[in-house]
Image (cartoon, rainbow, N blue to C red; front, side, top):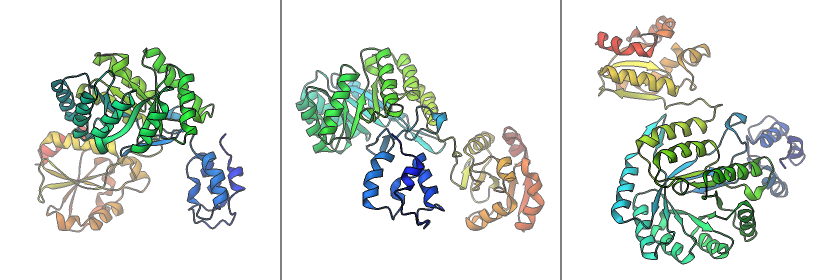
Amino acid sequence: MALKGLDIFKLTPKTNCKDCGNPTCMAFSMKVAQGALSIDKCPHMSAEALAKLSEATEPPMKTIAVGDYKLGGETVMLRHEKTLVNKNLFALHLSAAMDDATVDAKIADMLKVDYERISERMIVECIFVDCADATADRAVAVAQKAAAAGRVVIISSTDTAVAKEAVAAAGSAAAVLVGANAANCEAMNALATEKGLVLGVVGADLSEIHDTIAKLEAAGNKNLIVCVGSSSIKEAYAMAVSIRRAAIKDDDRTFGYPAIVNLEKLAPGDATMQAALASLFTLRYGSIIVMGRMTYAEALPLYGLRQNIFTDPQKPMKVEPGIYPLNGADENAVCAVTVDFALTYFVVTGEMERSGVPVNLLITDAGGYSVLTSWAAGKFSANSIAKFIEENGIESKLKSRTLILPGKVAVLKGELEAKLPGWNIVVGPNEAISLVRYLKDYK
């Protein structure tokens, strides 16, 4: 059961030293209880108190590292309750029963999906190598092709001997081994532990999975992921919800692990159904979603959905401040300035690119707010724009001295002219949609 702030406070030094960044030990304790800080942020906590509190203050769902990614660590069922911490990953399904040409074609199609959206690179993060009913030679061949693609490799097999060969073939790309069940969990646990892999637990039902996890935890392995059912969509969805609910609501830490769902098993060969199910399991508890294919047709809606669900609503979406040359702009191109709110950036750059006019877009640090909001908050002002130009050496990098100001903050023109002598401050349109005609006319 989660500790209250007062329970944590009783074990703190109560010196109010502020070394943790909080004004008092009570304030620190309340933030730890809310999950906003970890207990080890207090440098003066005794080892005994740390040991006592660490497990109790851990999120009910463990955080698991898969390659460079993290899964789990969630504390709520739904995003609007607080926030979801670690986004789900997508994996391409490869079967060792496929011929080489099919495997190569699927990997080539997957690698085409690679783009950036709101400062986040969108790619298929994992490749799932299904070794069921395959010989060790085929498992090795497909695992090697998967590893060569440069993505995290997941090996799936209940045959320990085949799994061992495939894991060795994938080398350092292998991060997850799926297939531990009630019958083979000891051997699979030994292999996963030796190779430092996350171990995926499978079973006929929740009871069997629960018992297998308990057995693996007793053996000292808490680096696990749970495989939800593959016999039907209804069963898989019910298992995913039940596992998350047991961990978050019922504080059953045995089920406190991320989940993996294999859509190629639930809807084999049906790309449309798999895309629909992928959206469902993005919303409801699929930490790794395995699909038969991932092209732009599937990626664009799914990655957009994932980014919406796993974005912290309490933190504005920002882009990095700096100079963004558009349409081949050089040092003589006209300058335009706006804020670092991601939506503003993408709308403005989209319209500027449509105009075809070279522009150096200057993105200032406005706290991730829109133009009017940041202006009202004092984060987008003549002072902040002048300071940005000075601190980033704009005058030494660019020769143009014409600066287009967003029309909604035309009131800054006079003050900005005083702050930036030698610059020609021009008021642009109020709305981004008018930028195309404005820039063409200005040119």
